[in-house]
Length: 336
Image 1 (cartoon, one colour):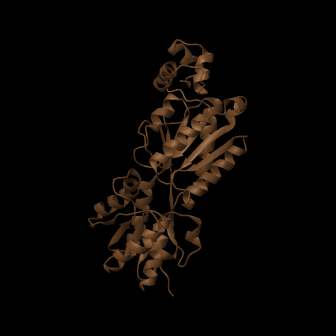
Image 2 (cartoon, one colour; image 1 turned 90 degrees about the horizontal axis):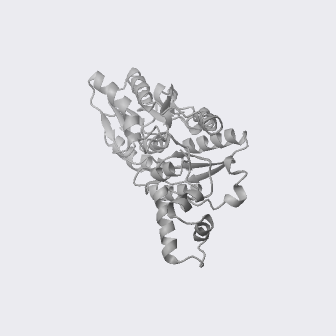
Image 3 (spheres, one colour; image 1 turned 30 degrees about the vertical axis):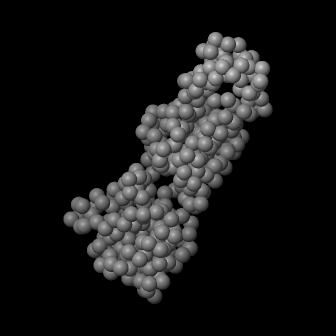
């Protein structure tokens, strides 16, 4: 599979390459009817004009696009930094963009990257309607990896790499039960999203096997939501003696909210986060968390993509990295 070229467009339209080139440049020398016909052929073939072709023809192979759903989250920021540094060692430049959980913005960014001649694309996708961007990437034959989240099921075309979030939920839930927890809540994560279902699944599996009723409090994956919403819900139900959060940001907000209400994390309630960002080891009490080695993951994704580009080795449709629970005082307990 290769990207359609200007020659393909000219052949399909029954015109010369120079005429198609004039259409691409919006030249007044081409009749509007002809221009419309050429644009229709371009749309049918999936041809995307490479705006930077003249300047990048000899070096565009060194440009890689990276689209992240939320660069404000340190988990994704560390991945982006590790990936960028790894490919830079092989003389590739990375164009990094934040979609801010907006599928429409994600589609516009991806189209712009295609137009500017990226050799490949790595995307941690936003959920929602994205303007058929994966179809466009397929037509343009841009090698594309989905990471950390999966938005398109065609992993034969868009391979997916992430972590074993289900096992992370299992490890955390078993740990909290081993610490004596009797009623564990899972907080954070928007209902209906695959990533939420993944991170809850291990928790639900363990509780079902033990005959324990789950307590699920769905919501945003932000620190503010943990502080202002989740904390209120947990404080209002004193029977909840442990919490597993969708991610560390939710848990860090929740910890602050609980402390304000007089419930001491690690003493009055046991807590485990998810991702093990750097701040987990720096707060008090230090936060237990499911550790995803995101720095190594970024390097591994870079190696996989470079193998695909340079050696033609197509990645496996799906790959899951293992996770490890890092136990700290928030779940093990504090004496002070």
